[in-house]
Image (cartoon, rainbow, N blue to C red; front, side):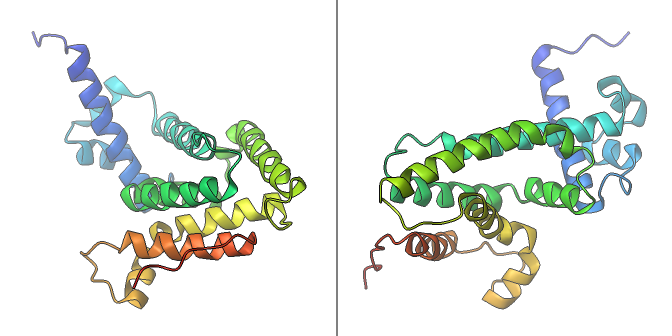
Length: 211
């Protein structure tokens, strides 16, 4: 008889399944991914996989929930809310680095939205609340004269688009930037340019890089 797995071993297997499913879903979407493909990517048999999951749909929703929670925390994990330059600069840096380090999560999310967000819609209310709180922070900066007037909601959407672009469109971006397929982006270059774009759009001064 096979001895039961320890809690640490069980977590390791669950992590392998989560990562394998994320990869398969990000490449092929929900409908294009089979449980057999997930099991193979995780190095498990299909019966063993079903010992840990109830269905691929339930696993897919778990990944959606995990990504939503992570992304909601990014803006409000920053302490210096009274300093728009520090907040936006840090947000851009954090979000671009996160996208470059976790491109499969970004692509997974984009695929879900592209198919009409049938699963994501069930979690959008809490995301909407987090986005509304961010709007309030931006509106407070405007009312205090700290930044030029912007549309807070559109501004956030533009931030999302730019900071996710290099993960969602990695092949295109690498081609036009002259980056080899197996090479990494120059993250500092991407971050500095995005910070300059948004900070100047808010009417804030941007230091020129040292020569």
